Length: 376
Image (cartoon, rainbow, N blue to C red; front, side, top):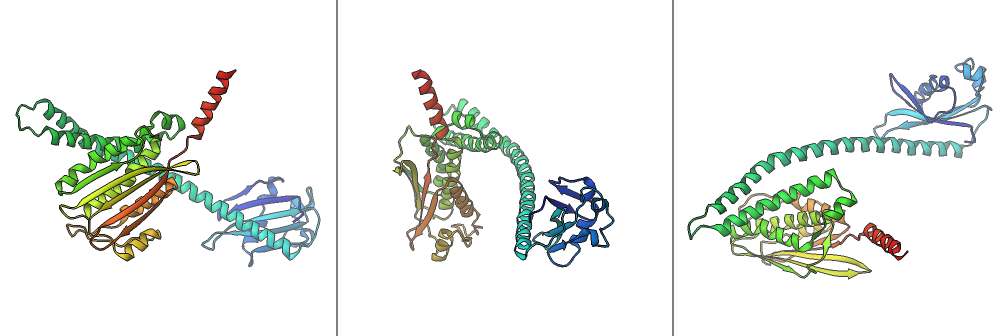
């Protein structure tokens, strides 16, 4: 607009606030901005303030800085409510081109988008804080009974005095409960810390994830007389970050839970994990295959296209709400991976998932710095 002053004015019935103002406060407190947003049309222009009956006697026109030109574009939100304007002031009277006015209008749209994004960010930040509090409350409510299960299991294992005492079953109960506590701790620690030092100190072997999954899902599989098999083709020494380990556990847990739910008695479930290198990056591949009823063609298409998956009845004729699959899709997307599903009548369901294993660039940088220091 080739003007010396540009400001953003936010206004409502009672308050007025100007952003980035660089002139005397009396100017942006003036009702000129209120008059501008009350006009029809998005652009309000006064070519010469000194000849305008409404503004010619105002202090900023009659005395320094002697403004003579004003042009503004409304800031209107998506609901159609005008909340302010972006305007320019100049000490010379003039008339700008239609193209310049359109540019000012486009700038107003960008300003409004920024305001709305900041508002959404603040709302999400508040909701995230509330969610964090809720998770800590759930932790308290869930941890107490699970701690009780672990404690009672320890007492029973210490006091066994019969040859037919079910020590193996009680040990499985204890290990499953401890795995749940590990997951809860992982979620809470990720929320509270989430920094490099924490990730570095809490790296885990992928084989530990497999062990946890066995502890968690062997009891429900055994109760339903299902064959649960894990085929681990991953390097046993491979370690991954805490956050990646937690996401992997959550993804496979949801898929296994579904597999158990939709597989009839005496069926089978198989989890296969493998590792490959693609363009100098490591990829974790895994499949979860069951011999259950399988998904319909419509459900497969919906899942593979990231659309909502219709509900299905499990083996107990209870309706599933399909939220688990949506959650899995979200978790896989967060890791930058891919997931798809295949099925055939009477052949069950098979999920294919590939997750890029995070590269520890920061750790490599630290190592190279230490090596360069040792070489000196």
